[in-house]
Image 1 (cartoon, one colour):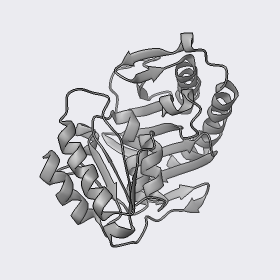
Image 2 (cartoon, rainbow, N blue to C red):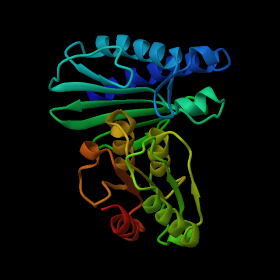
Image 3 (spheres, rainbow, N blue to C red):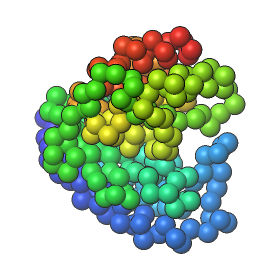
Image 4 (spheres, helix red, strand yellow):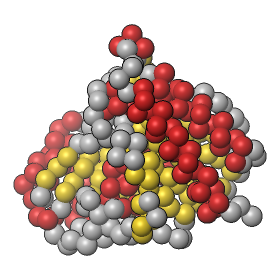
Length: 264
C-alpha cells in the first residue's frame, strides 16, 4: 500500500529545487537554445534539464513506477503505477519573462490519478492534492469560489496551438463571456489555471487540444477543492480527450451549456 502523504512530502522539496533552478536560469536562455517542437510550442534546455532532475528523484521515490513525460527524457512501458510529468508548463511565458509558469507532477495508480502537485515557480506557491483528502496551497485547505452568477465570474482559457479547430466557435464563446462575465483572461499555464480554480481566484477554466501532462495534477487539485471537472460534453472523459472545463458548481450548468452549444 502506497503512502500518498509521504510521497507528497517528498515532492514538495523536489518542486522547490526545480523551481530554484528555473529562476536561476530565466535570464540565461539564448534564442539559439530555443527549439520549436511544433506550431508555437517552444522548448529549451531548461525544460529538458528540469525533467531529468524530476525523473531522477521520482525514480528513487517509487522505483517500480513508469513515466509519461512531456520532454520524453525517459520512456517506459505502461505500468500499474505511472508518474505523469510536465517539468515546465508555460514555457513561452518563462522564455519571455512572464511570471506564470509551473511544474506539474501527478501519480496514476491502476488508471486513476491519486495525487498531484502543481508548483508556481514564479510565486513559489505549492498546490497539492490526494484523492479523497482535499486540496491544499502550502498546507492551507482550498475551496473553489462560491459565486453563483456569471456576472461575478472570472474566466480563463487558452487558444489551441493547432490549425485543426474552428476559430469561429471559440470566438463565439469568448464573445459570450465578454458580454456576461466579470472578465476573460488567457494566462498560459493549464496546470496553474486549474489550481487557480481550486484556490477560488478564478471561477472557471476551460481549454482543448491539451496533453495529459498538462492537466493530470491540476484536474485532481481542482476536483478536491470542490470544482466540477469534465470534458466539453459534460462527461468524465477529460483525461482521455484532453478537453477540459473546471468550474465552481454554481455556474457550471450554464458554462457547460455554452460550451456544448458551440463545441460538441
